[in-house]
Length: 205
Image (cartoon, rainbow, N blue to C red; front, side):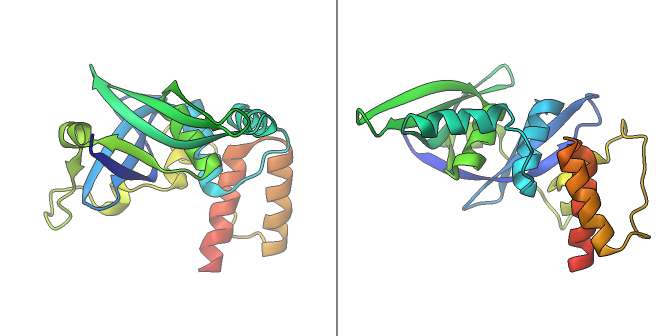
């Protein structure tokens, strides 16, 4: 079976389904994109890793990584192998370095992607799925979505319509921002931490 390598392009708020987000995977050697609807909790788990934030206590996916590492097991790749009734099915390919056994574990795609990011391993799908679910963005057509509207960043996840609180960080000094970032992570307020990190990155450009 021919495998197509995918990269995590970003996350965006799904306006048609309140509380849900779209995980966008991009074909590495092509222009097709696969949007996958996931929940807010799963989106946050992926966003935290994409943003490089370190929680003070391990989240569920971090615990999985620590557990697997302690028993000398490593996830080697993620494979999105089936699409049925709009649901993507994935599996983790694991290797036990103690017994030298390979094991495949069924997983929700959102969890599989969150773990792939933490184990720094590739994500694949089949040619059939990329042909069925892949979309090509015609960015030259004025009626088509602009790249920034589809290839979203963490900011799309945080600044959703449900986010009524708005903090203006422009008056903060860089030192104050870094201190507030540490406080937010320490309080496990990852939405606020992500906003502060975005402001720090914006100033660094």
